[in-house]
Amino acid sequence: MVRIIESIRDGLQGLNKLVSIEKKVAYTNAILKAGFDAVDIGSFVSPQAVPQMADTGDLIQKIDLNNTSSKIMTLVANKKGAEIGAEYDQLDYLIYPFTISETFLKKNINADFEKSERTIDEILNICIKKNKEFTLYISMAFGNPYGDEWSVDLILEWIEKFAKKNIKEISISDTTGLSTEKSIKEIFENAVLKYPDILFGLHLHTPPNDWYNRIDSAWNAGCKWFDTVMGGLGGCPMTGYELLSNLNTYDLAYYFSHNKIEHKLNMKQLDVINQIKQELID
Image (cartoon, rainbow, N blue to C red; front, side):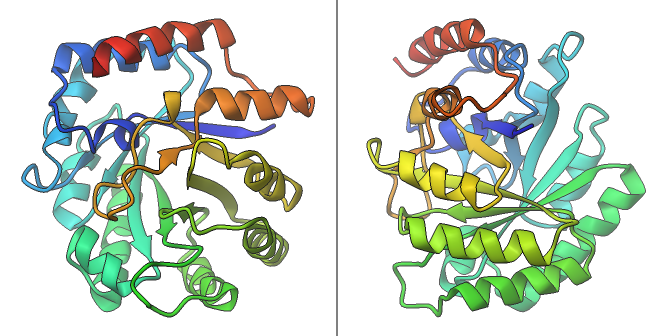
């Protein structure tokens, strides 16, 4: 069975207009009824850096978790954010946004590789103490616009380091639309074969009409976890590539239906969510 994570955070964080907490609660509650394995609802980062996510704690307290099987995730960028997030009993996962581009690491979370590895260790310890799961995202995993070193071998070297830390969930993230069918195939085939105890996912930013073959390449290479955003909304506000869309939830559902792949999404509920999303951004 495929794993699908809906990322409210990645859809909303780049919007210029702040969305009210009431609208976020209604939107999140609708998503929680749709059958996603997990929902990434926000982040505990500097409100100056990402003002849209400043009310994440309030959102966690207000959403209705009584009739959902979806797990709840939030992104954290440092030890302080992890300590805050770990105090919420409703939260199941803490996400850390690593990248193999040190330039982007500085731009995104003001860290270098050494600091980032220390932070990962700190968050892992917090997760163990507070009974939370940990998910690592490797952004710029298919190249970067800064001239920083990139190769499939480099990605695999970093995965080896994370495997030694006993990290069990790693999302391979295309942050700037640089992935190709070939690079996706090479990374996932090698990673899935070498590290069978790690669950690997794909987080895809892509032009709206250039997603099918990339998803197909990932699936056939052993990827069984995909991130989506309703309507393809959003993109990373720190990259300069904000016009790239996230993978549209409807597109992924179409891929699975077209290829007769079983999933748990409630398509009627997706239509409800899509209507609320339009009201959210209008």
